[in-house]
Image 1 (cartoon, helix red, strand yellow):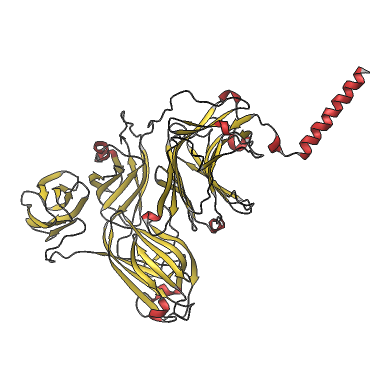
Image 2 (cartoon, one colour):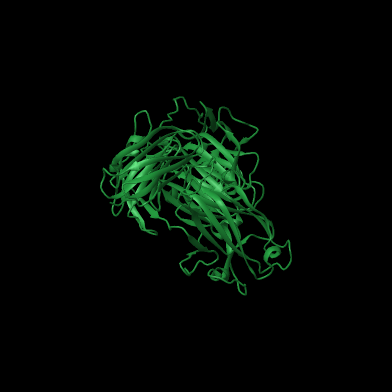
Length: 604
C-alpha cells in the first residue's frame, strides 16, 4: 500500500512539473544566478551617451551599456556589449522593429577588463556611431538606422547569456563578479551647436539617484540571471553591478582599483599638404612624442614634431607626400603621463595624404569622378570627406553655363552635414544649387552653418534663381583650426539640397597693410624663394611669448631668429641665410597655444 502511494505521489509531482514548465513563462523560475540592471526613468530620443566603465573578466558573461524602447512593443535597441571571455574586443549591435540585429565585433588595442575606459554611443536620425576614449571606431549610416526612431531608456546591465557559442561557459567558481561604472553622461542632439551635442545631465554615482534610475526586478529567457535590486551597489563613487549565485548577498569590501595600466597607441593619422597629424589614445609625454626617431616611415621626411595643448596630437612638417596616397607609419616608445609611465610597443597607423585645394566635390554622384572632381561618399572617421544623411537625386534640364555644369546632373537631398578634412587655415566655399521640384517661393527653405556659425539664413533657391536654373552661393572668411570643415544644413520647409562644393584655400598677400588685430596666428616669408636674406612676417591675435626657429629638412635647428614677448598685431624680423647652404628649410613660429610653420627655399 505504501509503495503504491509513493508511486502515485511521484507521478503526481511529474505531472505538476510538466504543467508548470508547459504553461508558465521561464521568467517565473528562480534562476541559478542573480545580477544587476539599471535603467533611466526618462527615455531619450537621439543624443550621445558616455560611460566610464570597467567590464568584468570571465567566460559566460557580458557587461553592457545600451538603449532600449521600454514604452511599447516596437523593437528599438542600440548596444555596447563587452564579453568577459574576450580581452581585446568590444561588440556593437542595433535592433530594428522587426527584431533583426546587426552585430559588429571591434578589436581594440587594450584589455577592456583591466582598466576603466570611456565608451560612448552617438545616436542621430542619420547614423549610430560608437567611440572608445573619445575616438570613433565604428559607424553605421545604413538606411536601417532611420528605423531607430522611438524614445529609448538608457540602461546598464550585467548578465550571463545562455548562448555558449557567443559568451562561453560560466563557471560558478568565478563568482562573485562585478561590472563597474565610474560615471555616465547624456548629451542632447543639437546639430549645428556645441559640436552637435549639448550636455544634459551627468551622474558620478556618489549615491544612487532614485529620481533618475530604476533598479530592475526582471529577467529574460536568454539570461541565466535574475536581476535583483540588492545586486546594484554604490561604493566609493562607483556603480557596481554584482553577479552572484542565487540567494547570496552581494557586496564588495575591497578598494576599487582605478589606475591607468595601458600604454598609449596611435588612433589616426592624416597628411595635409606639408603637415602630418598623429592622434593618440591618451595624453602623452612631450619628450617621447616629439622624438622624431620614434616614428618610422618610407617615402616621407618628417621634421619638427610639436605636441599640441591637448597632449594627444603631434604635428610634423612633412615632405615627400603624394596626395591621395596612404603611408604606413610605425610608432614606438611613446610614453603616457601615468605616475609610472607606460611605454608603447611598436604600433602601425595608416596615414592618408589628403587632396590639395582647390577641390571640387560632385554631390549626388557616387559612381565616377568627372573632370577631376571628388565623387560623393558617406562620412566616417576613416574618410577624408563625406556627407551625413542625404540621398542621391538624379537631375536633368538644369540651365548651368560654365565649367561646373556637370555638377547639376545629380544632387544630395535631405543631407544634414558635409565634412571635409583640411589643413588649418582660411578658406572660401562656393556652393552649387538648383531647384527642380518646388515651383513657388517657400517650398524649400533651409539655413547653412559653417563650423557652428550661421553662414546663409533662409536660403530659398527658387526665390533667387527660379526653376531649373543654377545658383552659386559664396561663403568666405572661413577659418579651420582643428583640421575639419563642417557644413550643417538646417531644414525649414522642404528638404535641404546641394549639387556641389568648391573649396579654395585663401592666402593673405604680404603687401596687405593697416593696423588691425588678426583673429589667428599667421606666418609668411617674403620673398620666397630668396637669396641670402628674407623678411619673416608674423601676426598675433594677442600678446604672446614667441619662439621662431629655422630647421633644415632633417629637422635639425639651424638658428633661432627670436625668442620673447610680442604684442598683438603684425611684426617683421630679418633672416640672413648667408651662412647656410642652398636648399629647403622650415621657419617655425611657436606660442603657448599653437605652432605654425612655413617651407622656405634658399637659392644662392
